[in-house]
Length: 254
Length: 301
Image (cartoon, rainbow over all chains, first blue to last red; front, side):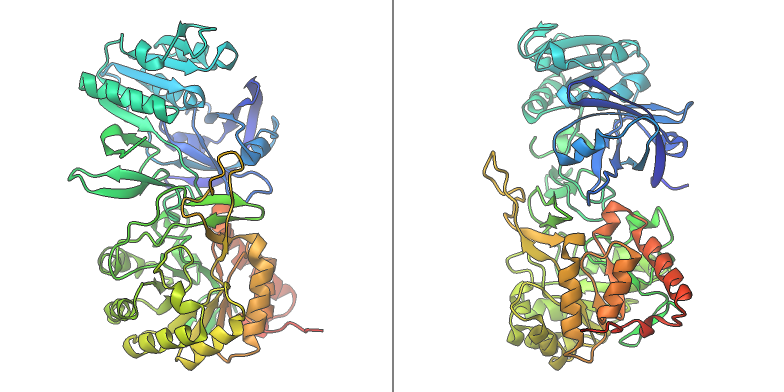
């Protein structure tokens, strides 16, 4: 069986969660069957040379669907947001290395802004043995809170301006929790904070990273990321194939 | 009917994956057998391992993209030991793309490939993204002839020279490669380009500049292949922005004997196969018995 493939898929639902953040559910049984949380898809945008890498938000192997929640950030994601229910979209998926899920280990999921969606799949796979700490700029931008709650995870929300939930940083919220594993996706400063938190607790930490990308499969070497191997040797790995989820100790800088 | 012969090497079809877009074939072999392709031009390989440039290395542009990967590769010995044994069992022609920063490096690399199953060497003297990445040999006729002759003397494989479009007159470079003893030419490599983030005022590519590829460069590539084909007898492998079978036919008519497909693979991993099938159908419909009947078939005004 192919570990990933490019297929035309039917868009079952397309909505807008908050202004500029879109929520797609795509029917793709063969691709969903292979997917694990934290992986991503390269989605073809009509009129664009490069596909757009979008993380998988949730996987439903029974109904054969993948869910994608993405933010309009430029012309590509703008084009992507124009798709409507019933349209056919071309997915190259599932790509990369996802989160190593161990439901027996209490896992702290830390997401910031549009870094929140890929953690939902991890929360589902952890079957409730998780604490999700989700950070947003303000109340209007809060997404997926109910989805995380329905996985059975404990859910804590922080906002930068205090308009909803805890007024402060996700790392401050996370510091009050017990956990053995930490998984995070979000902006650089947040990732630096969670890396320090995981190190302080002696927890295994995993970071989901992004980079400008071309092929998505490890052939073009476009999406370089500075890594360090077990012997301390520095090298460029690639977000698409070596990640997007990396053990935090491998990542040179975030 | 699709088979072509380039410098004595028989390709089952004229569609070759372009260097730098296809790695050493493994990632795309997960989706389709590489035997579907006429050949693969492997990622640019140097004598010693190269780390490549810091990110960002790629960005989209209107009708294409910029890249400045910087020849990240594990070195020729790693290629021979780790990739070539597998690659040589895939039922496709293998073109080793060789880059370097000194003539002696090119020669040593080519010598190491002499006793291997590599079918052809593509001399990369046109990588625009590395200061000492070979382009210094590729932008003057003297440089092109000199390095071609030097590598010709140490290389036992058919030698194809990949030309840079970042020159005043590409036909001079083509003539120089022919004089230096090349067996074939491939053109064009990427055109040097640049994009700037208007908010940060930083170039989007960390290397500041990068190589432009994709559909936007097709007309430039067609023009250059046409000009070069009128000036040299060498077979030409045409590349630059080919993304449809119609583009491939156009490139053959301009004077190419085969084509390479690169950036289009990022848009659609199956592009090379779709281009091959479209070409075959076109030939059947038009009673074209062999690809060579199309080569140079343009009727200029």
